[in-house]
Image (tube, rainbow, N blue to C red; front, side, top):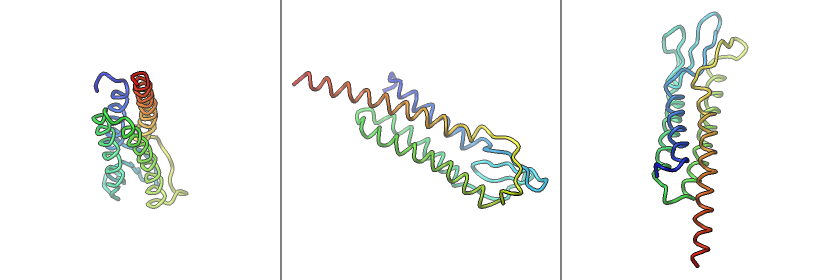
Length: 151
């Protein structure tokens, strides 16, 4: 289990999604006010203006899904399916982020300042999950070829 490279990929993906859940996603200016967008809320000049707990929940679910996938090492096809579902959840993280951004603040008044670490981490996690899927598939192909030799 822990000696496989896909385990490392899945652990790093889980850590990346946890990082995305607790670090700032972006910093904007809105009519001269500073807006910090985090997974737990939108802070206007340091005070919570809108709650975005859904992003936090999506990030934690994705992280837990990657950790659960590690322990299903005997069921490789289930690992692949859960990993694909996890990628869909991570894309949903971005879609929900964009939805909240457009829903809460009018875009024409937003002035982008900088991207936070939290926006980049799901992309890194998606890449790591895809690498894990490839390695899990290679393991499955190896096991199937060995089963053919035994018959």
